[in-house]
Length: 379
Ligand code: NAD
Ligand code: GLY
Image (cartoon, rainbow, N blue to C red; front, side, top):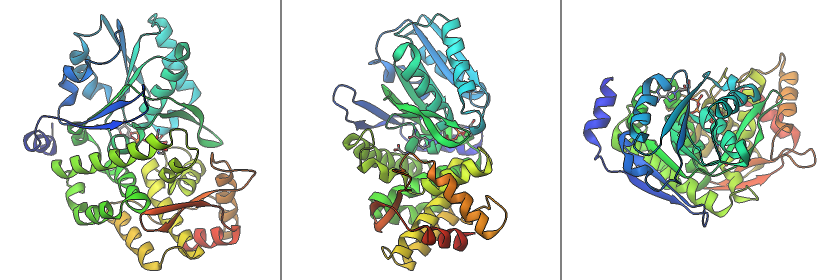
């Protein structure tokens, strides 16, 4: 274990904080704390089952699966582990099918509980497998990246990518429990930490500028993985996300604000090929582009765009939009083409999440010419 891991262990009290997400009888707790992987008590209210299946990947399973398995041993007769290939490029039907193959091979029944141990890729795929295996089995999110702890593990969006579009196939399906063990962040590569910070920063302009001020003041501590600072960030992000999703589970309206930066970001991910840029990197750059678009429409001033861009840069996230095609015009055409394959698009029109004023969003269309200007300005 490296030195930041020791820091995490020594400085944070062992007890966990709980953020509750309210969905009537499907409500659940998000536990945030240190060494939660070893805390069997947290699992005591899960539905009774004889089989548990830990779904993880080739990077995370060797580090954390055994610990989780040991903790779960008193609760389940049998515990299996499914190890998937690692990477966004594997968030596919083919990989999803590997989960179903093993669930059937192990004679998993309708009560079998799945544990998603990993980042957002493992979480999204395990959630989708849980939603569809035997028409639905219980599952638990055990997110091990900052991005997954502050965003993807909470709120029940599950799914896979399609070569033509990001996250285009999936289901809304809530976990029974989310367990954010902050100690797992000690082994996260620096680039992944930065990518997670993009989603942390996102919550400022969309919902809470006091939190944005706090992130600006604490960005160095976050990058240094200061335990108490990380704990506050994860808790505040989960509170905001729980509040938004609790009001609008299936994205009839409000929940769309969580996609700030994602319309441009998803185009970058699909256009470059999944995995070339990390999801958080694409979202970070996408937030700069969406802020620029908001400014060109007359909603925010250039000072706000500069402030957001500076923070994203300081977090270690690229802010120059990559070329998705050769030539300035062809590049904008390609962005527009990719952005049309977006779940928010309606009747062929792209809907953008814009900043109406710092801390508040607006969802609307934008003239292609303005979008082209933004792509050129950010390239
Ligand atoms: P990821 O799942 O690919 O994980 C990033 C990398 O870090 C992987 O190589 C992983 O193996 C490794 N890793 C994970 N935890 C580690 C640890 N503790 N120590 C060392 N290495 C570790 O990427 P991500 O950023 O966690 O998630 C991105 C995915 O999440 C995207 O597919 C995105 O679409 C999805 N997402 C979903 C939602 C949602 O609401 N469902 C929200 C945001 C993002
Ligand atoms: N990350 C976007 C959402 O959960 O809606």
